[in-house]
Image 1: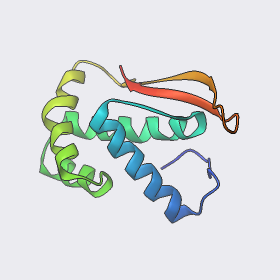
Image 2: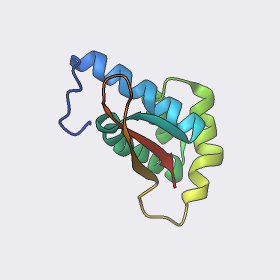
Image 3: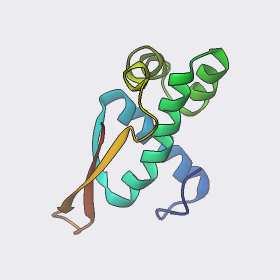
Image 4: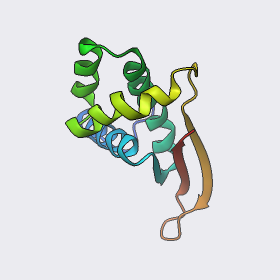
Length: 113
């Protein structure tokens, strides 16, 4: 579950947004978003990668219940997770990039290590 940040949304809106952002992040491997959102995305993406490392049909279905696109889940299990077979966590990196020009929101880049 997300770590206590409401991000200005109701629970169902927040979970839908986080599911979509995790899906897009795992698809592209890198994403620019606000810093609080990046801090929320990181543990959820790491959990999906851990499910991919363990493999198996039950884990695939559990990941597919969270990830919104089947092609991303398949790519996660076939390509992304095997790269981290020897690594015990810490699959993502969040780097601050400074304020956004329009509203001065703190921006960050989240990427796979």
